[in-house]
Image 1 (tube, one colour):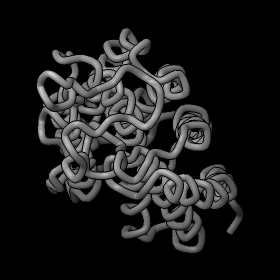
Image 2 (cartoon, rainbow, N blue to C red):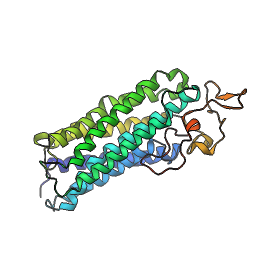
Image 3 (cartoon, helix red, strand yellow):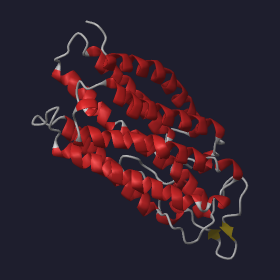
Image 4 (cartoon, rainbow, N blue to C red):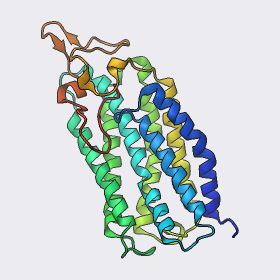
Length: 301
């Protein structure tokens, strides 16, 4: 059977993401595999796209294979999840630096937990909607529609966190300030376009935005390219940012409350109080190993 446009896009994804998953693994080795690391989710996205592309190619000799088609739809839907979690991880590193110098932080662990909860709900609803037997290519499940709306809300929350934290970038060590333009580049316009595509697929679900068997051009230009660019930006960021000391990585409660960053910046230790000026994780008991989609936000240390 001849290759169609969607199968060609799947081949392109394999060509792009097989090397990318190797680079992602190397970046994770550099920064750690803990759940609070945004780079863990670039690795997850690469894996999702490789499996999704393989499922798409497997439908060539089996175009009516329902399990393969269902798997492709679900993997396409949940691909936004690791993008958002990776972004949340990058922002957590930025916010943790700013909050170390701010005794009354604007962004706290509760804001990050709320965003995590939204992303978790998005993922569950996307999977449930993709497996709904009553859904059709022209009539997506209600769960899929709710998930698409939640993705928009999550995107808005991430953008707000970026805007608020960027105002305090002067408190961040110089070599860490690259996080702000990198996340801004990823969020606007690439993740914005990707979220818009998900919205159109669910609520228009016809023509260029058909859920199954639609033209590949829209998916390529509004989803595939955007996802890969975001992955590339975050992997570049991973190589540019310094590797943190072991004491600054992973679960923040495992290190002393007065632990200071190893790089330049105002001291986080208050000799009069005998303890540090709390960062996000230190103030709110971050990363206690709770189960959830993203884990220990907002700190990659």
